[in-house]
Length: 388
Image 1 (cartoon, rainbow, N blue to C red):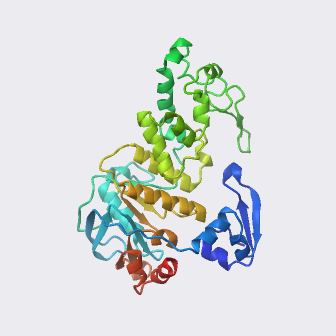
Image 2 (cartoon, helix red, strand yellow):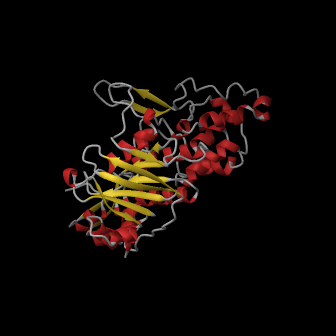
Image 3 (cartoon, rainbow, N blue to C red):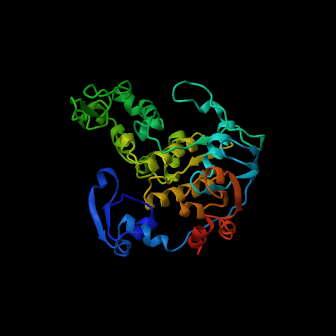
């Protein structure tokens, strides 16, 4: 028995049990079971993903705006004399496990561009990039986007929207008239602004429940008297990003941040939901949204190391849609990936191999997905089947 997202493994199974219909509180039920073909015919997230996958991938093949050239990469088993990495498109680096993809992109390129962003696990020391001769055309910074949820208390706080919303309400004429301007920045005394009451239990997981005093908002109860555009501050932070954008889509930085969430397919997010409730894919897209909302110009390349790891097929589809929208908007994305659906959707691919470790470390193919699919490489036949 296996727990799996990979469609090829699912379609080889004798019996499939589909759990859903959603994630977290929206999941936990058996929504379909039977042969792979029977599950693919159901109107569930897995069924839709399996059936739609048969329709083939769309490769955009945009033209690179610039190139990064790296020569003499030789860390670990790398033997790369020269490689050109495109900017301004959705670019992927693929190859069998152990072929040197992450060593080339994350350990060499990323550490060269942003060495201060890296430290060892035991000391705050700069980690040197992998050995290479030269790198030209590289931007001043890059952003490595992972699926880790550490540091995300909630989307609201992670994006700084809690303070932004507070400023809107504090500076309103209604807050002054009601004598609530100073109360806006205060926290619910019962839960210290956390929105939940936590009871630590010996030898057991802590018990948490929604704070009855504030209803989960973390705000003083009397702030319910203050409404702007028909919503209290509590309504705003307990609602979704899409609902907040509808109310405050004309409010400068707030609107930019909320639109960034929409751009990465996260408009359904409950702004106050705990970070621990996010999936890895949601955490990754949330980090992309924060970078996009920051208005860094020119935007740094986003580097993603196997972003589909642990993602359901439907989540992979959302990630692909988000990445395509980012690139269309001017973002630069370079990813290390195995998932053939995402590789087929790239504009440009670089394949490493042909094998792992001593048998890898070289560039064995480069070009559009269609061009790589015609080469005699390990990835080519899977790309060719996906692009049919």
